[in-house]
Length: 487
Image (cartoon, rainbow, N blue to C red; front, top):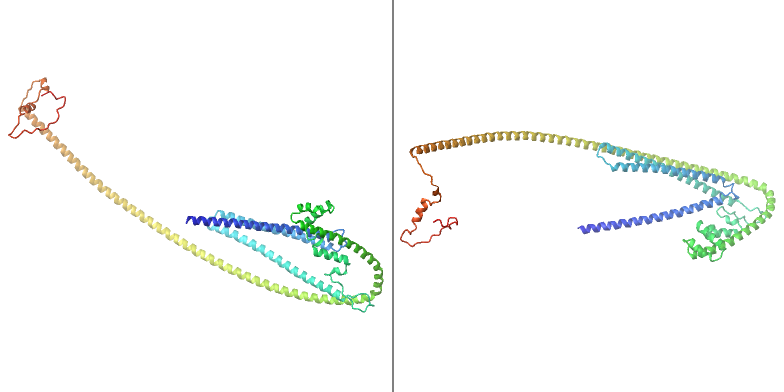
């Protein structure tokens, strides 16, 4: 039995160690993924700043409003992060306080009520936090839907413009080709530029699908060794995440990138020169067609205005329907919440009632127990008093008996002593009478001390056998040495 228990404990310990290792490995993977995503976010932010918000960009003025909005939203996000962090710290502090209270549990109603108040406070804070987050998420979802609808409306406008637009050449009998849509901007670009943009799109952007750090390290070693192939070995050590084959492929891609970039620059230069030559011709044609185009533009603007008004009406009706749906959902949620609150209050009332009944039962039981203990204690005292009285009576009887016995023995002893005294007196009287009758006078003879007694002398005289039977040798005790020779 002990061996099985030990084996189970060892198995549980191994399972616990394995779970800890798995959790640590999962945490490590998550942290690595977060670091990778943070690096990508930093790279995207840098690209955004470089291409959109750069002061040297030609479209700086167009993106200034977007930059201000981006800055404002970034500030709002940071302030919201700080606010959420403070709320989470508050909840964490309350939970720690609750755990601290649980370390010293006291079975008293005041302590239980205190724990209940703390738990209700924690629950209320968490519920408020979740409710605020839910409202914010609903607002974000609503903004996202509205933005998506606006984007779709703008795309429909762009598609309508591309379908209504015609070429300015009226002499040609062929139907006018539609303009390139906003999602296919490479159609109007020169072939070298379009090929370069397509190349970047297919190969992962201006860094060939590599992140900024790896690509920067690659360029640093390539520039240090002036493009010699030996730089690959040094770059392989500095970029541990890439193999030699990947670095060679990246070198081939970079050479292609440089070549196509040069061709793009030359093509853009020629295109600009061509556009400058065509600019004058286009201006002259535009002046002659301005009146006709103005009328068409007014008609087109009217149609677009009507279309926009219709879209606004549709969007407004959809928004109203959505608001009505949300109000209905909110009313249902409030009704559900109210019903849950009523159920909770009813349960709380039932719980309090049960608690009061249980408390009353405990008090009744306690009272009965105290009465029973008091009755038993009184009975015990009565029994002890009776026992003491019984012992006292027994003791009195025993003492009286012992006293009688002692008195009797004393009387017997006194009688015996008196009898002895009487006997002694009688004996003395007899002796005195005998002394009066016989008067004995004996002379002192010290030599009598060493002479044999009369009994011994008579014993020596009767040594002959008595009777006619054979003489049987009778054993006698040994004569002491101090008596030998006295016969």
